[in-house]
Length: 151
Image (cartoon, rainbow, N blue to C red):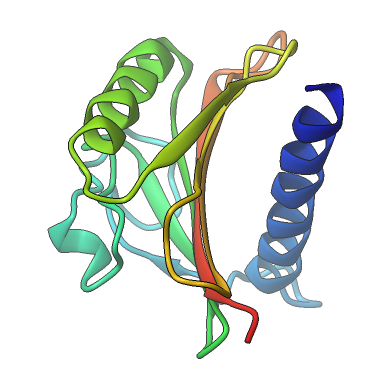
């Protein structure tokens, strides 16, 4: 079980690193697509299924989203939202994954993070939803949504 937690954590770190690389340029500006909640401010927005277009996982209904990867191999979003909404976001994805025809494995990390990994999709197809609580002293939590192929 610890190996699975480390693997999920490693995937989240890679997606986050890619997001950070895609979000800023050398002059400090952001090239990431802000989808909801304004122009880069951290006010609560409404990231919904509609705001993510044809992405196969809906947004949780709160927060600001940045498209961090948009290629044939990987599409990924990072959604930041107020830390106070963390339990509601986890409950949203618990409910959503429970209603899907594909099976998702839910893993709780010791740090309080929760991930849902697609386990019954077609070979080479990977999907992960990873919710991370706010760090001590921080006001924002985030969820990473990633969907990709490795074949």
